Length: 295
Image (cartoon, rainbow, N blue to C red; front, side, top):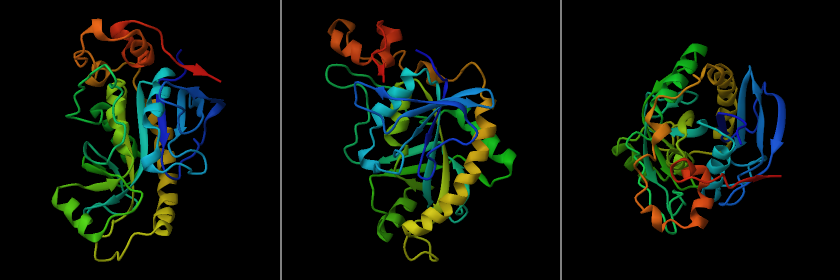
């Protein structure tokens, strides 16, 4: 089944895609449970797009509880080859100001206990994550942000924490000492799972605050973040309307073949049940149909 090659995962404040036409709502059931919400399929300036609100409509799901495997699997089953993720982040650098857009190129995983791989229970895979964001998709994203005139930072390290609480001042200073540039709660395990699914993945990170390390910020409040986020989301909508139709038809990045040599388990030991469960992910290497249904 193929419905759309481009997916958008909307973060805090982005629960629908402006300008999409012919929209239909699709409920996907995956071997890893249901996604955060129904996926909206439609057309944006002639481009087929699949949109998924990460936290669900109404922002019901916390970062720790996000069904990331189901989200990525569902998008993969619809034929998605590229995902643009929208994420609210705090800045850990003076020069990265609130309302700036960051296109990160590195990640630090400081989450705890999130399911971050499709390869469990009898099958082992080791996908490379040296460059966790697709460089081609990230470059296209950077160019789109620059073209609309927003202040953008190309590259940077995104530190992913468990949340849902914000940092202590001691933690914020520690993260700065590690060389992290922005801090958020949602880029992982999405980026890891997208790589395992051979999907290009890039993030539009909206800076909403200076975390709590900055001398002008005694603390980070939800009120502060939501106010800046509302302004940042307006910018992101303009970016997406420019970015999504600009995608090239073919992919020539390493993301498209990330599993070519990654599956370590002897094929004779991979059960039919596991082959069926991961058909959308590994089917082209082991054979089998996609195990997914719509309602």
